[in-house]
Image 1 (cartoon, rainbow, N blue to C red):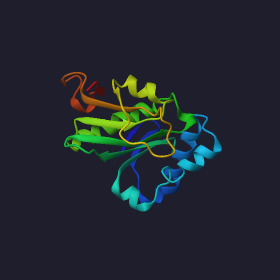
Image 2: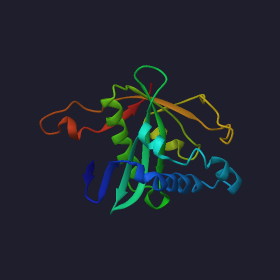
Image 3: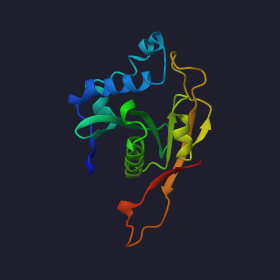
Image 4: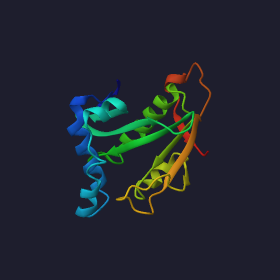
Length: 179
């Protein structure tokens, strides 16, 4: 568990299924999708104990309340990972939660030997992915409810600087860089 000021990142447990589902649904609905589309997404945005056990899921809490989460999965190729989910509640957008989650996700990917991450992202948060240095790829798969314009992103990551005594590796800021 990582804790800084009032932000805490922790591994999700089976007791978090409802919380994860609510965050995912609320965050996705924030982008203005209609009710029919959101209902079509419900199964993919619903978490159960099996999914929580199978995926590496980290929840961000601010002031003890949930603010967002990510999930990391092994990718299809060696050294490749997949960002399964990355959601931040609307009230916490623009406040550093997404950055904290992405930095933790990259650290988690590194510890698993991953050097490349892929993600299918909705068009609205896509600028955030580009901001991390990712590049757009053709979508790998197209769930029936996802818009045809849904971009896929890929990126390699490395440290932005060499660790020094003044700024050790633990403080190094990871980045996703263009593949």
